[in-house]
Length: 354
Image (cartoon, rainbow, N blue to C red; front, side, top):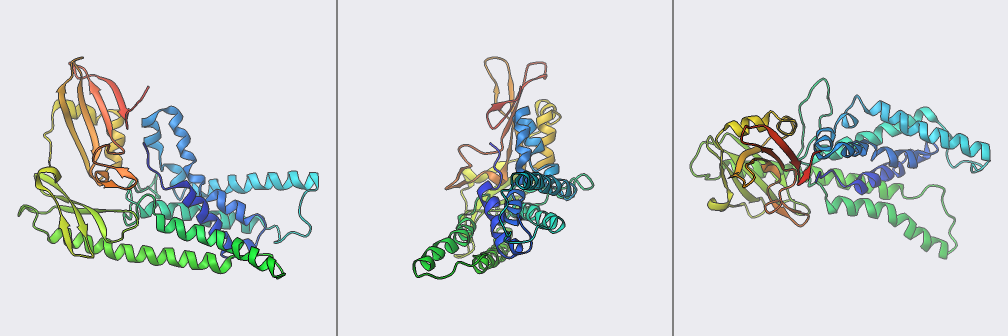
């Protein structure tokens, strides 16, 4: 189960951006920016090649600065074809609400595409915007993969103008050609303000986890993942030389909640099976992406003689209203080896790669 940013949030972001004023400058701005805001997720088509292929190419070249100009060209090209078709059928509105400006529309489409990369960067999955020149993954890790507050702000910005338009029509008020600019700008400002507040809380959560008493051990790294809705609650990973300590940090009450028995993950030993699994297709892709991988043999050798090596990412090993990270960790992989240490099967989130 890949967990991309909610596609409806992307689509609504493109529409709200257009209503902020771009739709007044060029015809087709709303449809172009709405489509472009979701266009990078077309990489989900790689799922046809199997779960590992989908995982490998998720947030791939369509989520890079190199790929955006091409994607913008495709979106504008499709709209141009529709425009020409409407011209031939003489179904264009007369006069158009805004002038047809293809160069300007291309620039607006690029802005919507950049909004997709920005939203994807805010969560803890990350993306590689500078690929192929820089293969590093970047993740802001201050907004959950689906944030209901942002969703609600965008939804209000889109629905409120229509609602007030109905009220105005009841009293005979003249309908303006463009509606909702104030609502759209307000929603975008509120989202940016929310991001800023969450970044401050994330930094505070990192400081709390770093200064906490984690078994009096040397702290090597600290990472926090966001919870939805509540900006004060964070899932923390504290790495020491011998183990990882998971904890829940509350910046409002300045508290760290952890259970030593359940939240300590000792670093597993490197075995021949884990070495082979790490060099597999799944292993190479997983270790390239994961910043907190936990790779280990599980359950020994099965009755059919296979050894299982599991791949999990500690960043997603926590429960939220939308995710059962402890019981069913998302973005988990398994490599199955026979007694000769040959790979006979690979799975991603329970789906077999054929």
